[in-house]
Image (cartoon, rainbow, N blue to C red):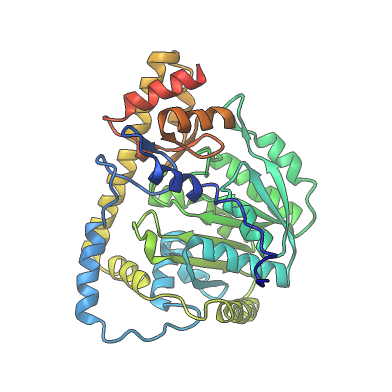
Length: 398
């Protein structure tokens, strides 16, 4: 008898599992609207020119492939935190702002969750809905998952009142996961006024903000998308930010992330840094260096930074253009106001408001692949496949 007889198979990942179904589908008209990667008009994902230029620089100056420190590349962390918090804050609050390089945004969430579960609390609140992997990550950290209402599917708006009401029942020092911008999967973000109200509420209730920051630059812009995080930081929150550079630098396979933690004072920051680095050491020991080197090279060179910002603007503009074309095409079929709410969404994703049975029908009958909750990646659309997707949705949703 094998020692593995007791192992029971698990269901496939809710996002990558559907993407694998897409690859096996023989339908010549199939359309992939699943995984969160940016695609251009030809539905391809090209390496950014700024990244290629940075790699040329690295090839000339890199002398070895030695280990990075456990905490990662200090130059990368410095540049990443300037992007998140702004240069002035990083200078003023250097002593209380700790950063560690992580294996993508997922690695930052996991490392932060491990630290919180071990040292602070085991209670974490996730938005309903949220990115499916959030639950798995924090459960794996031994944390108890609660949810708070976030999105009203009837009014297609943020359910802010219910959100506050639900979190008002949370215990002190509970962790609340917030999406810094471009909420996944709804694309619906709080207004600046609502972020301010949340900040005051969190301080009063002594809740711990944990920002998932995966789409900086894909919403309103680099500075605008960081507004909520910067506001919370300046209001004196002890808080966590897990940032990803997969999307905005196109470095999906390099797994580059940064976990930032703000403490009340410098001594507390130094103390927690020792625990975080110990957790990293017994997990993956040291982060990979190549992707961090690319980002550092870009952000320390004015010309490459300008090129990267232009490329990011191009990606954001394409996303918004497809959103507008999609909504306008839907308006011709359903009436112009029916899907106008989608124009007020930010980032790659939007929710179509269709149920699981309709999602499965879209996949099975038309080869139009979207995730279980009806989330679509807008950059999976182009002028060629848009009419087909609209037709499939019309026949499925009615």
